[in-house]
Image (tube, rainbow, N blue to C red; front, side, top):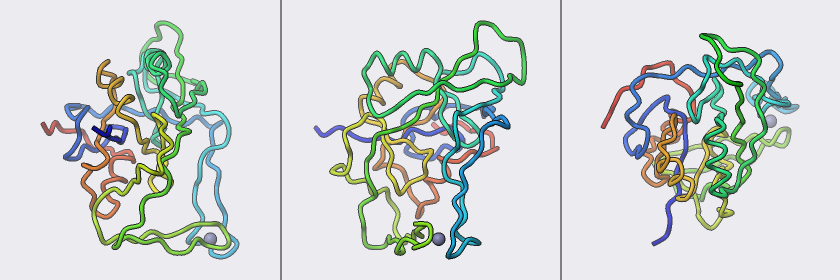
Amino acid sequence: MESKLYFLASPSTILPGCIYGQSYTVAMPRAKWSGRSEFVTVRCPVDDKNHRRAQGRRGQLDVVIPSWPTSDLSWTVYSECLLSRRALDLFRDANLSGFEAPPVGIVDIEHGGVSGTPELWELKVTGSCGPEIQRPGRWYEKPCKGCGSRTRHSAVDGVFIDRKNWDGSDFSRCSDYPHSLAVISERAKDVIVGHRLKYCVIYPVEELPMDGSKSMYAISHPSEKTIHEIG
Ligand SMILES: [Zn+2]
């Protein structure tokens, strides 16, 4: 049987179709960027008003974490995924591919005392599953000549990842989907579920209900709402 692909996301909003992590009942505070981390802003000579956007981050990730120790996986306010030593060791021991793990600078800890040495790594996804498949009902405008921005329109539900575009990495990204949404392999999913790594949610790619692209944005962006148990 062909193995499945999954989305790995932060448990800020839990939608039907979630197969792991759906029972979190308390929203976990997120790490904040310290003043040393900043966005790279894309400016557009053609239409700066509509095309200006933040794209990626400059330099190392420096954060203020809510408390220490953190869970196996934790998240920043911009949905970067942070790995604990345990999570990093499990991913490396399983030889999972498609990620780098640069160390995260921990500038401060907001609450409580500290036991042990605070250390975290950023899950930086390097694998690719290409752009999404073109389907009737979903289309992209031609990229802007000034900045490459392209507007997406969707009249159909569904996630359209083409396995033929997937490079086989255990962690990958679809270039048309939110940057903070990692696509993971069956193997990576098994490591996370098998070791009950907290704090993340997993959706089979085909089963994420899509309302245009709203669902994907909902699970990939932080929400202040409390997480309710759904099943
Ligand atoms: Zn532009």
